Length: 501
Image (cartoon, rainbow, N blue to C red):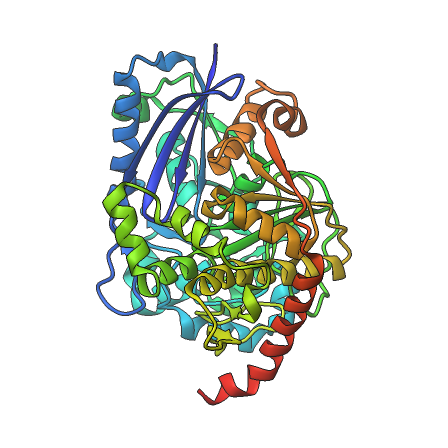
């Protein structure tokens, strides 16, 4: 039986998963690494750390008895926006500038002034153009480290780097390029006007490919270093959120995926996005000819973590003492409060608020406290506040012309049946959770399997690999309608207050 090997290269950890042709997990390994933050706004990682973690996972897999000759494909899915300069010999010239690095704020501001945010959106789909964009980061590198820029043969994103190390070819893919600022998402080519404004050279960027395409075989040099076979094909994957949508079966209009992790990220497939939408919903290139709307909120699960660590410390202690999950105990606490949290509302904008109605100055707010308010009300209000954010995003998608029929829930939030019920009741949509929680790796495996012919199409692979459980509707519709109206009115009323803080 043939295998598909995937690597999900995240911000602080790498997951290695080996699937068979039925998409059963045959081997899994993971490793963590620590980012370097030498000064405010700078977030880096020595490039060899990624490569060593990759090689270590392969060594462990080989030691487990896997026949390396049976690995038909290796596919990567990575974070977007992490930038790596390499020389003509493929050696990294500078630490990886990680996606959350914010050193290029001034460059991003300059590019927005020169090109205009509306034009940037029409060409790139970037709802918000920030210093995280590689176009801004590379402009910074050219200005502050000109010797690195001149010496660089190519500037690669993280997935591109692994593909290059294994094949010797500098190739990238469209989903990953979507957040660079230099990719014209509609014309599927580098955007010359952005490159000119930033003073960047197109010939220093990799060749563009679609997601899920063969780049080449593992070279003999890479095989000797890693233990992979020279018969294994290396394929393009997709950036992590796009791969996760594929792994959840989000491949048709009407379906929405929501990932409640640190942030809340929503994905909605569409064949014809509206690049003139004044709300400027973030758009990514999807795996095929389509696109993926990807609106998000900066703070979601991290707000629940904040609640655990600051307002529910005794719950955290109890969980440690009894070997339980603190989040399970918070769910039990929240169940003691009725739908609507006895009038307590949370605006969960602890780090600003993206679209709709964006504001970098927005703050988190608990509203409606009385002497009768309990800790259980606070716990439930956190869960409901994230649910209201999700409803706001879904309404924005529906105003853009999508008909949302179901939500597939992923991330840590999907592990809470109560939270899923609350989201379903607020949004009045069926919620489904995934049997396979590692949807990002599964999505990459699906793309790799299609690329090498194990499956005839993404649709056929999804039919085989993706399985869901339905949780149905939560019936507290009226109380949540009232709560959502208050949530919206409260935010609007506080906008001038946020501006004074």
